[in-house]
Amino acid sequence: MPSVQTADLARMRSELLFDGPDRTRKLSRFWILLVLAAVIASAGVVTDSTATVIGAMIVAPLMTPILGIVLSIVTADRANLIRSLLLVVGGALAVVAVGWVLALFTSMPVVAATSSQVAGRIEPRLFDLVAALATGAVGAFALVRDDVGDTLPGVAIAISLVPPLAVVGLTLQSGAPDQAWGALLLFTTNVTAILLTGVIVMSAYNVRGIAADVDGDTKRFRRGIAIGVVVVSSVLIAIPLAATSARIMDETLDQYRVNDVASSWAEASGWEILFVEKRDDVVVVRTSGPLPSPDPAALRAQLDAAGLAGKHVQVELVPEDRVDLPATTN
Image 1 (tube, rainbow, N blue to C red):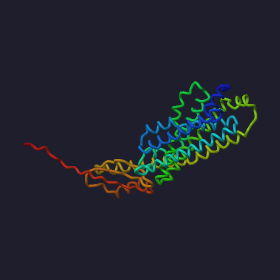
Image 2 (tube, one colour):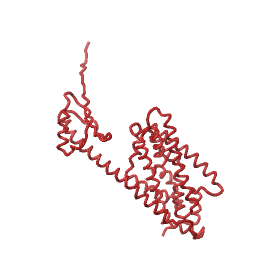
Image 3 (tube, rainbow, N blue to C red):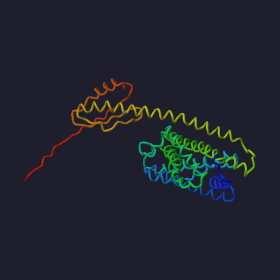
Image 4 (cartoon, one colour):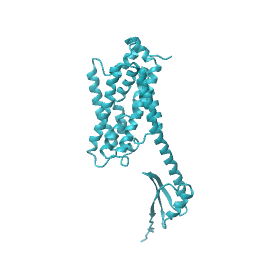
């Protein structure tokens, strides 16, 4: 069975916990980096810059207290568990506040319609939980094994913590609370996944046993309760993620079916489909071609015949006006 050593436990406590004689230095580093990461992430979302958002992921120190919660649960360390929880909650609120303040200085609302960075973070799916579970396992593994610590920057990029919180603040100020809720769900999903897989990995490496040898086997709280809370939270979070996944899959299939029918309808008149997309509860079909335009009523009839009678479809007709300009000769 894999096991860490006493030196490994001391190293993990030094890296993850905000106690001891250098507590002030650790806290100042955490808050400074977190605020700067929040500014970078918010700016990246506003400017729709993926590179900037990735930079915020690397800078952000929020992973540290989250893994500190994991270590505190495994070692039954009540004081550091409370301290790490407060840092995560306080840090999350700080990032949301930074995003909200920066949204005050934007010229337009920062919502899914104006930023792909927002659009990509407001509808978390079940696969986001799966990815977060794997990423959390890698992060915990990199901590218990100091020989793979160079993977942590990749973990910071793979797990999305600060950007979703920035999106929460930006969308709240922009008047889109439903989008803010989606981004908050993504953040909660990632945190819960880290906690669950982190506890599993650290337990597998007998971190609790080593801590008992070092500290004495005095249980300061019941670890089983904390672990149960993490497991139950993971299950509860999976429910809305599964519902979102099912809804998006249904919408995607409907778009493919509408596209197939609309393509046949348009091609019969020499037109082509430019795009088919979902806007709220309406499937929008944009098509273009030479006059005369194809008959929208014929498309509705074909959609009904294909079993899509319950789908609200909106057709955008873009006629092509072509004018020949023959060459002139002197």
